Length: 258
Image (cartoon, rainbow, N blue to C red; front, side):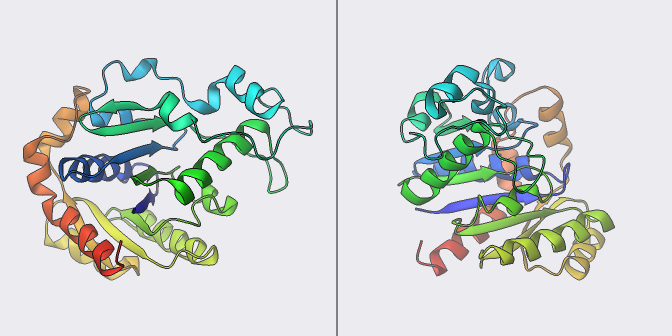
């Protein structure tokens, strides 16, 4: 089944794209797991989970981390299992909402390329297991920016979507993400324009990103209202506005025979 990673500079709207794709594919009858791998975990809010503030990310579950790896969270330099058991974690900790199973992983800050800790090893093994063994559609809402590509965690995804706004920093970051993604072997990389207000925004994104843009999320006052009220953004009105994006992503995956 398809494995899609969504990345981009912080604040571009990657969590919005992740939520909309997850909801659309679930409504189309696919078994969907949405993975929130962002340290600033907000996907639960956007999907409409009740009391999302009560969710504890897997990376913060100290007892679970110690039981699985044999070392306490944050034990840099300690001896621990590099291949902990992870296959039961998705079923154990995922929350289902509107046909989407949500797994909030959180993120781990690593001080250097040679610095690992038990929680990072657990998260990396879990993502790798799900990418390689899951029979479900996976939507990964990744950490903002570039750091996760340095670890090679997303090397097994079928498709990378880079979310871009009509501004210089966003387009420059998108180019950096594309380069790092190709360095770790991701071949199918496309851009998504976000918060697009007019043709001028579309032209700016198309002319400055350097990645093929496959769809757009238009600016929406209704979307902003739902976000402010902590409600699911996957309403019929928003979904109608972004139907072209979903169809484009689906078409790419079909062309790849996924």
